[in-house]
Image (tube, rainbow, N blue to C red; front, side, top):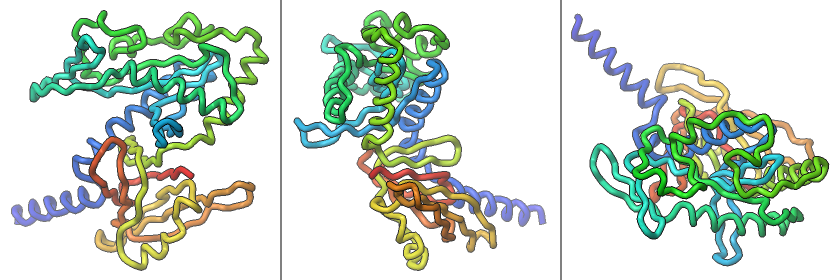
Length: 320
């Protein structure tokens, strides 16, 4: 009898895990994206009135492709392009500015191409994009930083990192600044002077960046995020027909509202989606499909396509 109970409990745990959770690749695919949102939320708390934009995709005319910017922080003192390096291990720099990161567990060393130069090169790309959209900024208004928010980041010879780098120790020591940011960690930002001019620039920046191209994004249960590209849904044919209206050209956002349990084999979810609305007249619509229907997604910086069950997803936003 006891053995039978144990077997039933084991089977139940297995089914619940397969129903609600993904495999370990979810953590690998979402760790960097989740770090971006964590950094963005903290920056907005640190600097009152600021706005952080995550996963901006800026068209680069030189390469005929899009350049990804982890974060763009808009404050009343300037704009900061932020590259987030969620590195874990012992990190040092070489003579060319590249970073060497050695994993403490496996003692494997990875080369990270000069993150400071990488972030620096994104500044003129963003400036050109903003100018094309009618926002001409004073010289020096846009600066850049590299933030290392991972608690397992260990810097070797911390003084060898340029001032544009915020190591984990420095990151944890940042305090809210209620006065001017000009004297804080945002360096090299031109003080515009007149409040009405600053307000005008900030208003234009927020207007442009809120409509800038972005990465598709999944919000996963457990306070995790995945940035990348939505590919398709996968599941039973009738469910795919039901979800047929959720296409990039027609829908900007969807959320999984409710899970209904009719035995684990027949569970369903309610999916609420918002049509793209350029006139403010469309209303959200709702459909019900099987919970094991999957979202096929290509995460950023990954060569592998991932599949996520709708039962594990909170929301998905699609770029235009």
